[in-house]
Length: 159
Image 1 (tube, helix red, strand yellow):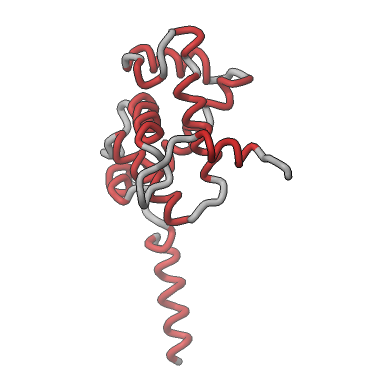
Image 2 (tube, rainbow, N blue to C red):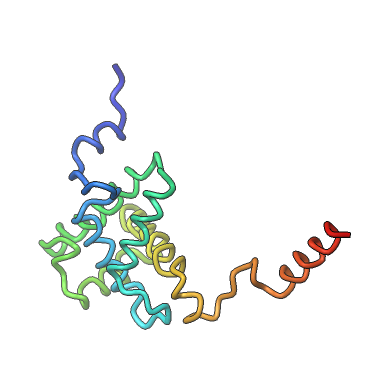
């Protein structure tokens, strides 16, 4: 029998609540990262909502690789232990901001891996409908060019 990293992760990771992919601790870690990365963001999406949006995305997509996201969040949580003697969520906002700036941006190794959590934050924040109006984003189907193309296609179907 071959044991994979996925098998080990699933056995060791905390059990998420029913209807969720991420555990409470993982949601808290993601929200703490979002608090740092979305500072001064125009999205209007709160850090906890960002985490909930990512969880909903993973649930809806029935992702078979969600365990990788979960492992990443545990790595992010544990990353500051050697240097700060505290987990990511136990650090102050100022300490978390400095950690991200000094250890993740433009670095290699584990810091570079931890920096991948940024993509999750972007997904959770900018994938939220409220962010569209706040940022001026117009989804492709509502852009004038595509509205005209769709209208022309409908006219040609009718004719």
